[in-house]
Length: 291
Image (cartoon, rainbow, N blue to C red; front, side, top):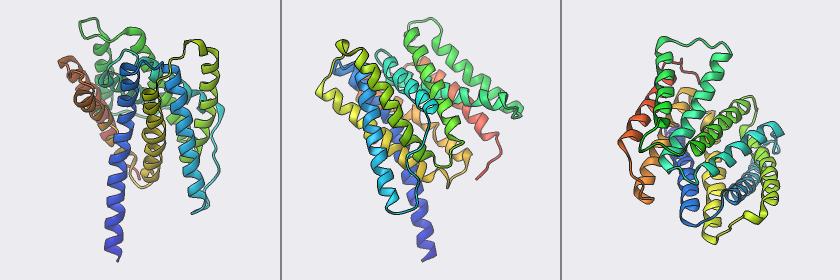
């Protein structure tokens, strides 16, 4: 009985982590697909994604409260503002960035932001970690250097801003006793900010039924369900493992972009991705494992 229970728990953790990583990568693919193929505007996509995510997270909290002593939706406006900046920058950047390039810039900015905060707080870095951090930063810089494959600078900077905002959101969330409840509350607050922006620029909005469907899927499934799965196992795996598995997200996004969006996997993107992901991996693996 105990062996079966342990096996089921391990199987659930593996499945939940795998599905969560697919969901996170799916955000990039769905956003790029909506903005590239349907003509939908980025602001509408952001608003619908946040509202759909907020609704699903609220429903999950409702369900959880009938099975446990879970808390109500929490969060705060500062974290919600960071979440909104991430979601808006993410959507606007994908107006022209490829899914693979966007995912790499986003992931790199998130990790560099969190590493930078660790250094600011006085966390000692080993030689290998310093090398990894410099390698990751070099990969991002090379990606933005002039050349035939250089992404649009304004959109690249927007994605880097989105990544930095998500890094800040993650750092603030680490102080929460219930990250799931905090994220649910922050999604509702961020939805209000997005809807205000939508009302301000309403004459420029371009809605499309297919695009709306992609936005709902991005919010409800790739964000809401993805976060719920991820938070359900975060407390059961080491922080090193949690950080390591996230290295797969830009890789999955790149493969999905090649297979479903017909985007090329260029040599420059390959080497930059290798530098960024390899550098982050060195920083992560050099840290002491903790449960």
